[in-house]
Image (cartoon, rainbow, N blue to C red):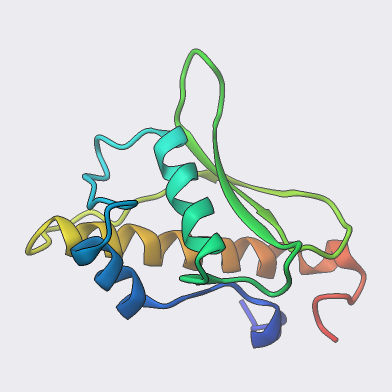
Length: 135
């Protein structure tokens, strides 16, 4: 896939700030991907965006995680590019499988993956914005 979404319109993650938050702050704790639910993941994303750990293309842009349904609360990533267009929904949140040295590294890997997935969703939907994402 070609890179049609400019860097200035992408979400970013300050991994060092997130690592420091996991190590020093009380508002966020490292988590196990297989045990975190959609509501908790949504809260973490929201707080990281509020604190600037996840950079947004504009103040109206937002990443969110929602359960697919009440009966099966599998996390689903939603991306609002903040351009007044449609809310972009991805598939179920995908987590990197593999061994990580500790809970902080596992949590960081999940957050990196979520931001990467959000940017892939933007990339795949760039045609929906009739050139707004390629300016």
